[in-house]
Length: 202
Image (cartoon, rainbow, N blue to C red; front, side):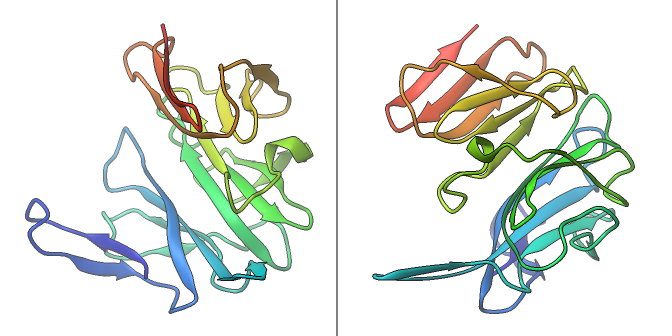
């Protein structure tokens, strides 16, 4: 389990980051302005037919500035939740690469924002409907042109225009929202996937 990198078009792979056998990499994002800058989120989870244990020391966020050769642990940087962390979604703003958001499952979880590349964080929103059923959702996406705009996917589909502090609910034709592609040249053009299929907006 972990983050793997290929430098020959996918023929061979090297593990560049691992948190051991109990945690897997569940999200990875590349800075659109510098492909050497990567953020990876890990999730320690144990599932049986009768239980789900989400969170542990293997969960957290890591950052690389050299294309994945080395990584720095941001999980306990100033402002991040203390104690056990569970599943985390992470995104970096193409409009301002110093701005990073993390959607964190924790007792004091929520939407966390960094304005210095992950060195420190502020919780900007603790709204429960953004992080319900964290094991099933926990996806966050930055607008490619507007550094204050960010989207969260969950049972509902949410957008913030004020840096992640407050959210309005969008209305796709189906619930259970899982993935989002935003056109890097025209952010009004998006493809969103949910349990009903794929939907397009222009």
